[in-house]
Image (cartoon, rainbow, N blue to C red; front, side, top):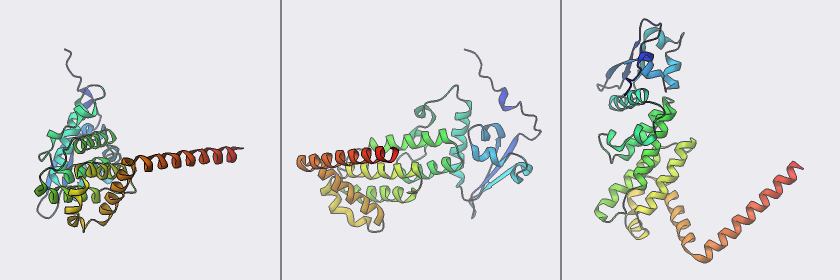
Length: 245
């Protein structure tokens, strides 16, 4: 097997290839030293920061006090893997659930996805998002009702973290709502929904999804809805043709 060509890591004409990232605040600070090509190969954010004449480029230091050191450590670990992979890695090989110290920490997964998105590492953000979707879709239904309040709060907390105005995050919100309604059958939900009183938007979306599920499970209502949607599509096509004409 041919040796991996790593010359791109060191072929820059720059004298200072090592860059510093400072993360954290309030006594939880940490400094990372990373090769510039690792940072910039897939991240538009780091590429812009380290491009002259930015002050970060001149000082070789990027300060991100709002980013938790543990989260940045995970990002740099996966960015190294991403940069050194041959060809185009699949999302599954790029990001695995085992990469996270706490596999079941849904809110932590969401925050890490948002970090990848903030750093404009599109491939890594997609890999994390797809891993998160696989994770929530593979969860079993709630059988032990003692676990229900905790599970409810975890899903609601993750939902609240995601921004409705962001296309990718809005899709994740919908997936969380749909998978939650599959995990918690209505009888379980109504016995424990009071724990969601501090999450009004999630509570509203879940209620709408349960109503939608009930409609689609009723043959008459499903047929009525299908006819209505077909009629709306026809009307929309006619209107489009009139506008073009």
